[in-house]
Amino acid sequence: MYDNDAREFLNKPLIARVSTIDADGYPHTVPIWFDVDGNDIIFTTERGSVKVRNAQNNPKGSVSIGGDPGDGGAYLIRGEFVVEEDADRAVLKRMTYRYESGEQAEKDFVAWKELDMVTLRLKPTRVIKVFE
Image (cartoon, rainbow, N blue to C red; front, side, top):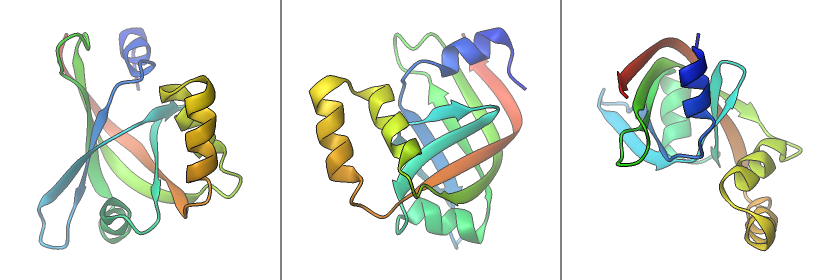
């Protein structure tokens, strides 16, 4: 699904903009941390968030990654969302340490692991390189 350039790009800890579709058919787009799991793009979020509710009602959506100065390009990835449990908090921990390090990562992980977090997984159907 991804060529070597895309995989290298997606390994950068950039801010993604995930878009779900609300009940009125409009996109709901928010910035969020992400990681790659195989070909899937994963996010960690609170179970009660609007994006989780939207994904459960309409799994179609997309994520835009990059596009800011210094990012080295941008990708738009379309697909379908699946909401998964993160009972052992492995995805939350992985995500926290991807974007933060040391004492700050540990502090935030401890604080966030008490929240009702789930994994939002985007299963890609199309990858579009927007620009280099």
